[in-house]
Image (cartoon, rainbow, N blue to C red; front, side, top):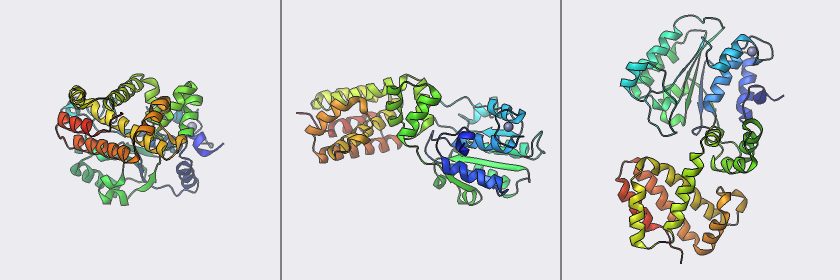
Length: 349
Ligand SMILES: [Zn+2]
């Protein structure tokens, strides 16, 4: 059995192999930095590494010992997982037990108080294992003050401490944090790997698995969440239907539609991401790379538009959509951004 399978990890074979090798040869680092896109499997790997290190049997992680069972339930007393909280007020009221994120973009902050909480927790010896393992998710949510507080722990950790950070990109963190951690950069999985896992491990039917695998851009966590949340596909369908209506409309109708779309400003970033995938699909079709297309269930509409629009039209639409997404992120007025974009899309004759 491959190490990643034993660890219960889909894909990321090299990352697990290198960790397994380091642990077996007793050269495992005391701090790790796992980077990669949202929902690609960073926290899953962090938890699996903790399980591997704390397992009490030879063939670790065995999945059966007391430590493995507690880790599977997320209640091992020598593992602490921190993530950002919605606000300081929330933290004062509830401490670090943050509710699950509503979506990938929900804003959270890691506070300096949380870093101190972990430092204090690490200052006493393990309760039942050899190590105490502190995991901090999405370390990019930590401001500089919190990162500096954590740096102190990272510089002089107790001998039994293992620290695992996850972040989208090492470039978002203080260089002093990055240089003290062993890097593990996770890349998106192939669509085939995601599709296969959805069918085998999450009992998806093959049509859903194929579509979600493509929409996920190789992020298995996203695909699994989408599988259990039917509104993800529904929201995507609405976004594509709106786009397909827009390209058939004249100026006045576009402005009306854009105004309506911009009212749900929280939904706009996801909508624009869906639209970007659409234009990328059209570029792929125009260069006859049909096998790479994401929106496989819209193949007829895509092919019709690939016939109608020139590559320049498509590229311009993709650029306009990207720039709209950037402007929204910079808090430019949503209605204005949506209107300008709507008017910049090509029209089906
Ligand atoms: Zn075990």
